[in-house]
Image 1 (cartoon, rainbow, N blue to C red):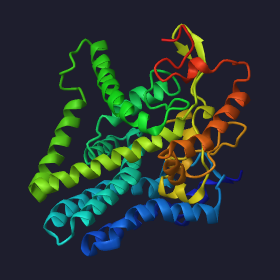
Image 2: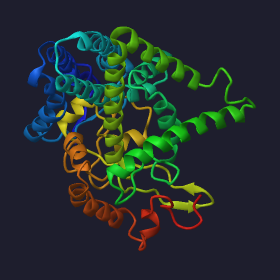
Image 3: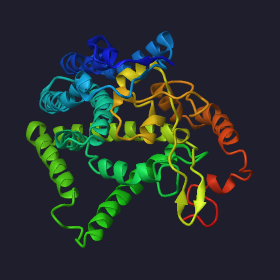
Length: 381
């Protein structure tokens, strides 16, 4: 692995490939204006193009120097902060124009699906980066972005539940071994909403405050989501609301497909007395595919993200197979495989078994770990 110096990281040429996400903007506008096959270009761009580029460009295992100053990351940070106004403007155009356009029913459905692919692949991913940062403006942008897909609780669930309990029974987002995505998806949507609210309620209780206290971020979540629903009605009427809800549903599906891939079958060792080993790079699937990491701002370097959650995306480190399990393809291909359980199991179950043998050779009976409702040995909370 080569190390990229702070001077290299500060070069515009190093940052600009991550700006390829903006290519979705003219594609979305073309789909709205011309209909037909143009409405399919958003998923083709996000899934097909970057998978093809991965096949051509291969892996990128270079790591940034961790001493790179914040000022040298300005272009990377600007990208994530600009995306909310870009996405918001596109959604407004979509909700206002499409209901009154001459697009047919199937064209409108295709456009809605494409918008959801974009807001889920890029929007939620960028909000994920922003919610981990300390400046209030970045966390606010994350909340605004999540409101556009009606998934505001994701910030609480991700920061206060998932990062604490990844790889344990308390984390709904950790997909169990042999749990197909079609079982995982309804379970995780249901359970994460509950666990996120409980986490905020518990935090307020520790301060001696009731859940309805003004400091509960759920008031902000609900307010922003209601505002987006009202905006959809104002711009496009009932049809606009249906289009908005459709893209939000697709975006949610995209997010949870990625969540499914990121931790499938990986568990942390139970230490007893309600404690687990510290989250390590080995507890997330790593992917070094160059082009998809451009589109997803290094989300596939997920092993390092869980190891150092506050690290900005250009500084995320790649790990080799000695430290972290490796996906055979980038996220677009892997999420497609996840939709077909027999294909997914053929890809991933042998890799999970190899991971167990590599990192936990002393554990002979994995059956208790594989149960969706009680995946840890007796005595675990």
